[in-house]
Amino acid sequence: MNLTLAEELKKLLGKKPRLTVAVAESLTAGRVQALIASASGASDYFLGGLTAYSLDQKVRQLGVTRAHARKCHCVSQQVAVEMAVGACQVFGSDLALSTTGYAEPSRADGVKDPMAWWALAHVKRGGKIAVVSGTVELPGASRLEAQQRVAETVVGVLVAHLRGLRAGK
Image (cartoon, rainbow, N blue to C red):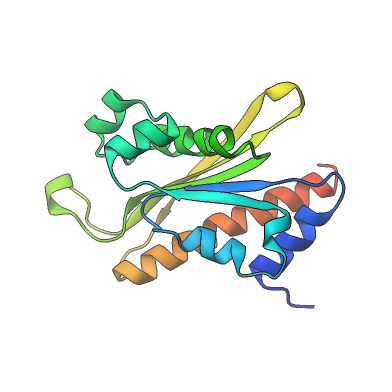
């Protein structure tokens, strides 16, 4: 059976114990939220998302550290992690995804190709938060291709995480 990412996510999140997910996006501009919500019944596990493009909104809404984010133009592993953790806190979710990066080259910032940092936060029993993060590099991708590929990548990371969790790994 060839499940779409959204359908597989629904299947995995629907198992006991039921888990919820939220999203904090920048670079992907709502595409992660749209992908998750594309499965019928997503409201059973998808609590919501926040698209925060500006430094001020990342700080105000998600608790991103202003000084660090300013130095890196809001694109770093730390910013991605803080965004994911912030989304868990804002929405009260078990899991959260985040994306931040460059959807196209930026000479001023020394960025030759589109790239993104992503993070997945998982609130464990007792409130401890486990986080994994990584990067996606997209040489030659257009702005829209980069945004879509990053969204698919990060939802794929969540699906893989849940497969491992449900398999007891």
